[in-house]
Image (cartoon, rainbow, N blue to C red; front, side, top):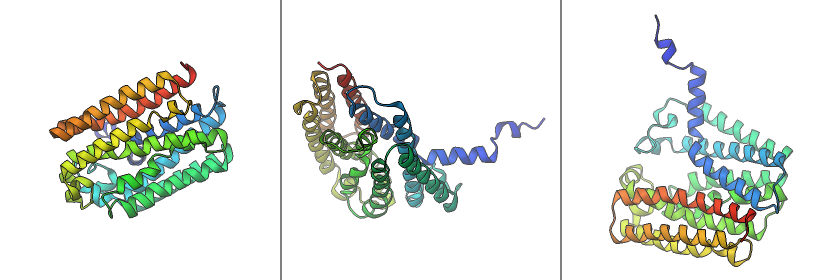
Length: 299
């Protein structure tokens, strides 16, 4: 009996799985989640499900395409970092041509869906986000400056704006506040990761802040950003676009985030940096979830 044929997936399925892995599913899930929250917050009631589903799918496709292109550009860097050395682009299991074709087709399909089923504004904003992440951040900023995360964070902060535009065909002040929250969240989120992966980044040659300015300076910057983030996260409440449920949640979540950053500044450990990185994801997810709850249960 030939057991090998049963244990090994067909070639096409294996390639499909590898391509899917290059879309960075967990990262894209958070992107799409924030975009969907933006869709719900833009409406006084429940949004129309047809553009909501189309926008969700379109934003997912373009975000996945940007992630795949990022993997292609950084395949040599990924190969020397433990966190990313498993990626099919880094191992050489997938060549340049299939990744490039996959990214191009996925981006084109997402843009077409957004243009025909949502609106042109959302399509162009999403395409601009693709260019911002895949080209400006990945190709230009990341290898050039330790402020890569700060400047490049603008593209990563766009999802709620995309969601808002998808439902309203406009960008409001409330959407820009959501953008600002994610923009300020991005540096401490990534710097926590960079702190316990400093040697990986040093080997890769990327000028991440812990490599160029040291651990303590990075930890101080992370604390300052968490403090500013907590203040800015209260802006929806201050502008009367969110109520007490959200305000209390923002204070509590921000307090924990500041606590992690303060402890990290006083006494560093890889375990604490890793815990802060993981909490930062929980923080953003719960903060946006609190906005949604507050939106429909104002208090």
